[in-house]
Amino acid sequence: MIGDYLGLALINLAHRRLRSWLTLIGIFIGIAAVVSLISIGQGLEDSIQRQAQQVGADRIIITPGGGGGVVGVAMSEYSTAKLTDKDVDAVRSVNGIDYAIGVVVQFVKIEFDGEVKETQVFATSVDPKTTDFIKQVDYFVVEEGRYLREGDRYKATIGRNIADEMFKRTIGKGDKVIIEGISFDVVGINKLSGNPFHDDKVTIPLDTAREMFKKKGEEVQIISAKAQEGFSPSKVAEDVKKKLRRERGVKEDEEDFSVQTAEQMIKSFTSVLDIVRYVLVGIASISLVVGGVGIMNTMYTSVIERTHQIGIMKAVGARNWDIMQVFLAEAGLLGFVGGAIGCGLGLLISKTAELVANQQLGSDMLRAYVSWNLIAGALLFSFIVGSISGVFPARKAALLKPVDALRFR
Figure 1: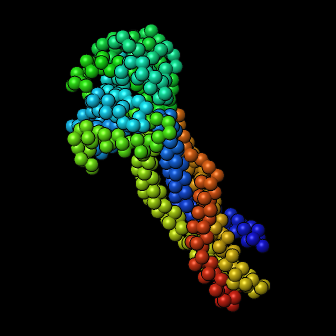
Figure 2: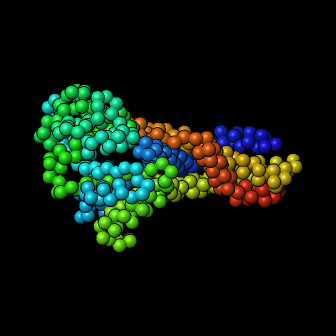
Figure 3: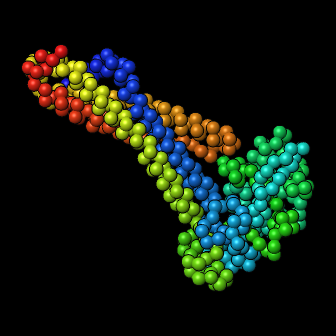
């Protein structure tokens, strides 16, 4: 019986092709927007999760300023508070901390083979213990050549994107690059991490960076620490806060520094991403409401056009519920077809965004999220919107009196 209703609905839609296509526009635009936004948003969230896993769940990041910071940004440029080697030593002394290093981050001009580009420098100490520490951080791992070591002054390791893509000619181990007018020997090339921010960096010795950038005293922009195995990173992070408050003479909730674990950074990123995604999906849903109104209008028109047909159906024994099901099937089918087109368009938009973003970034950092649950949910939702929009027109058709319907021309 349901197959008969759907077959009849298909015949009626085929007879009104132009009107049906115009009715579908609102539905498939709304579904396409919702599917593409969810796909891209979930893809970004998955990318954040992957990057956090690469850094390590046991990592703790300390930045200047009390409002939190983003790893990789030279926070001292935006905060009057500063971190120093003294703070690094204080973090190292906290129970549960395996080791901690201070990092100077600076945006610079880099020149190779006559070409000048902009990138960022990460500067760390080059003692053996620090080197052992950074070997465990994905984006510091050297794939070709060697790590920086004690005695190195104007030596550098470079990210994979700088080596292979930033300049017309590939940079290899043993080549020279000029950073802010000073020549550096490239002794190592980092492996590709997939994060363009890290793959576009240069790493140089900390003392050299402080001299070049005229950093006051023993200033650092970021302190990166690792919790010991068996210790909770969040608990150790709280102990780090307490230690730094005592060392820096600040009260609780008045800190001039931020301490974050990898888990906290993920939550802060994803919470902002979720808010943006919900707002955008809410705006896109307006199109679905418009599409539903369009289906309702089309179904009302269809009832008027087929009043005589309804009278014949009732005259041969069709019940009110049978008439309702015919029109509900037609409205639901309109929604379903619009949803199917919208899903295809939405996935095409999200995959195009993935392709363009990754070409611009030079990595596969963004991967559009595609799952059967997303597709099934979108199709079900569009079918429900169509069916609900057809309820009142279907009820009107079902309540028509056979005699009045047969007289209608």
